[in-house]
Length: 294
Image (cartoon, rainbow, N blue to C red; front, side, top):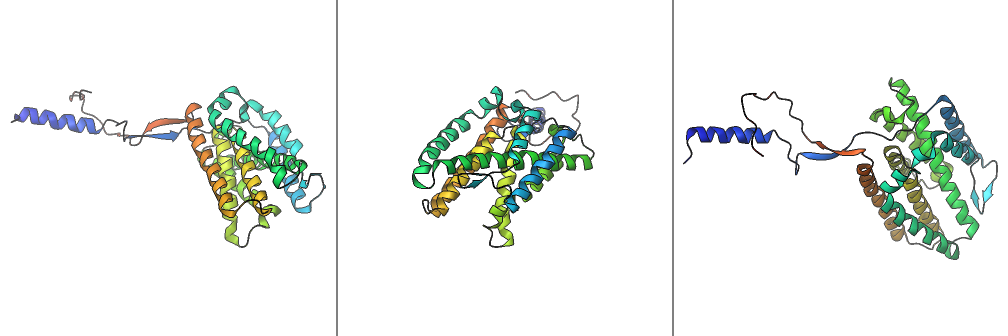
């Protein structure tokens, strides 16, 4: 039987231990920041022109620049100019970023290459495949990069934040930029033609927001490009009758799940996702009580 002093010491130790973070259950992986893309008024002007030009050319189909049967956007050169101004290393082309995404890029890139080689034999000719690759790259540059920067910087400016660096935007402006860019992307004619009702816009917005989120969180546009390419190839194969609806859903879902898992791993490697206590106890501790032994 324990003495009264032993029981009291045991109760104090239990109470003290209850305030300590438990690595097994009291800690969570949390995002601690956004990627840093440095902006300037010139960058935002180019972003605005690129988005307006791409939307206008998509609806009017002018100028009629085609690669195969795929309409090319005149905003692609402006997107490449934005990459040069912001810096390719900041957009996922640095050794550190490539290493953080290494498994996803290696596996996803290999699958994409094999599919692109086999694709012309069953669905389209090689020029059509080239057109799909260039068109997807253009959409990523315009709607996951330029549009997000333009609308996110506007939201940050209205919120009184430092709009010149995406790392300083905070959650509100970042979400505003992602959702706004997703809506603009979803209202392109190729997407509107696939909608049978007002609620059909949500899958397109959700996809755009997810791809933009991955880019803005990790600072790399490469993973989103690979997933977008796989989804578009699956859609074209489905409409050509070469892919069943079930298989198309399986490919899309698998690509998106792999993207989210890859983001979780890359975020940890880049130091943007860290362990943090789930609950922080701000109560004052009694200085006369000795801490519990580990």
